[in-house]
Image 1 (cartoon, each protein chain N blue to C red):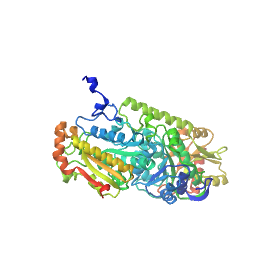
Image 2 (tube, rainbow over the protein chains, first blue to last red; image 1 turned 30 degrees about the vertical axis):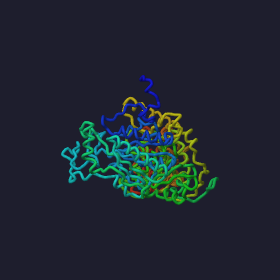
Image 3 (cartoon, each protein chain N blue to C red; image 1 turned 90 degrees about the vertical axis):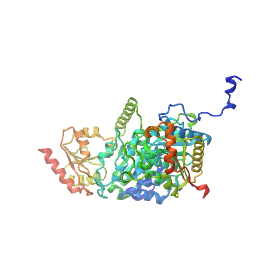
Image 4 (cartoon, each protein chain N blue to C red; image 1 turned 135 degrees about the vertical axis):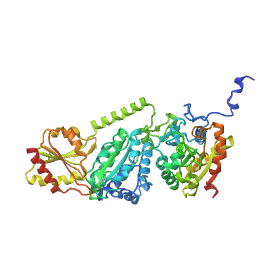
Length: 256
Length: 366
């Protein structure tokens, strides 16, 4: 058997998603963003929604999401993505509308837009990347930074007396009547990636069925911000993040 | 909804709402604030989502409203918001993004006095903010200043037309007087909202997924980190603004042909000035009125021409002196340019304006 015999479509076990283009990603090695982009590209393609999707990118590391996935995009001001998504979905009800936001964008400057879009039950999905730090601006404290965790703006560790407590947006979202599906996932292992994809697919489908708003939180790594190599960052996440940010479904309208 | 022109007695704010439905507006996104809340209230009562399919959303803030406008406009839909001065201040971030990303949309400002929470009474003190961009960066917004309830209705479609022609946000800069007063209005003839195909033809730049398999993805963004490309984008915007200045100046004159003195005023100040001109004529002073309808682009050339023929300008505006600087720039020091305004929500009376006209006449003689 020659190499040419083996490289045949029927033997294909894995390929780059069709909607993910060849642009070199600006993300750091070990960052979770690339994996989540891949999952979104796969789900949109599998749902046949390429020409019926509008993505809203945030301010933060995900700002250039629009460069990598071949669908129509809008780039929002910091924290305002759910407001843009609200209008897009109300004006184009047959479109798949989603936002892609980090924890600074969603849980600090955009808290109002996030909570109100979710509570109005806008038929959108919010993909929420939570790495407990501001990545793009260089590792400052985020609303989600864990107690005791060190960042450049809390170099002695987050002290609730000075900095307040980490904010758990998915738990808040799960209490809102407008949400259909709220799930917290991660992408640090193959099984986790599969579960995360399933959650994204479910959220997108519920939004298209008009069941309400959906929040998929991805507990993510930030090797650069955490100052850890990729493998150690994954381990640190498992040991420290999952205790406070528990992975799993927080609300599922199908099971109520 | 009647197809033909409908004649009603309406508040300025109500006229805006009814005109929006009739001119094929796709969506309104707003937040209550005095003195413009009747816009959202009227829309809520008329339920256009059951007739034309127009979307109406009460947002959680002006910040959210303007970003809904940015999102909706980016998909090629005709979208609008309305607010009053403190709310418009909050919207500046979104207006700047819309200008940077070249997203059309209509913003209505029914001005009240400031600074800060100020007052709920009328004012024209947002002139500088409206005509200089207002947010961060080098940009301009097309600004239309209605002086009647009729113009509140007429300018909605005009603002949308200009906004889409130039892919730029447009503003109707009204005030608490025009928003709250009632007048007879001939509403514009009703026209349907555009279909998806029509939007695709008019807005090939729009980000809505339409026809994606036959084209490259569209991205609505104001971001560009490469300085040479960003400079080029800014130059493109500036060239567009120059084109707007050349083609879209609008104004109205009244008795300027044989006038010795001319009042320059917009909006409700122009309405009050008309009465002042009548009184001045009775007292033997030949006074005309120049009313800029577009505050940006400003009718600079026309005012400059007038400054060669008359003895003095009186700028009447309900603020501490904002448009007066544009008039002085246009007059180039040839003739005296005085300003008269009241503050704090007080509107000037015609008699006060007449007194100022006689002061100007004495000054010009000296």
